[in-house]
Length: 206
Image (cartoon, rainbow, N blue to C red; front, side, top):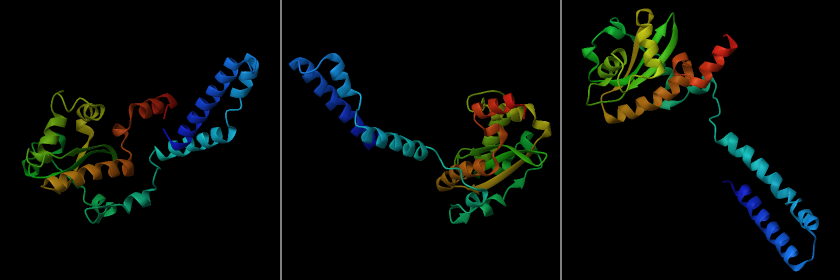
């Protein structure tokens, strides 16, 4: 609760107490007491409304432009530079990818040049990207039952796999987590979008 809301609540309690005292002492009729309650400090109410508006704005991420996202830094590198490091994996999602076991980072499904889904693999000491890709392309199980993973399995033959290797350490895994957030904002992959956004698109016929 914001400061303005606390102030409004305090005013309301004080007004109710005052109205109750008037009733007990017989100073006002019920209607008279209601007239005490109805004003409820318009200035405080207005401040509460403006405070709520600020909290609502502050409670949501302000959408950044593509240029602003590209200028973000992860581990001393611009997102623009990280985004240039995606590399295609010839074997695609169906391959075993033993060369990626040591690396943590991101992988993405690309269809006809459009990024459809971005995932992260951050087990730096447990199989890295190779394990993450094996899980996403395997049969339904805990950890790969999400919408994006299902869509990858449905369209695997149509998809190109690209990976972004971030490193081999726990620190690199943390960088990969932050990179995933920024890359999703940058590329807006359809299969990463919340269910509400997908439903809205479906209803609009787009």
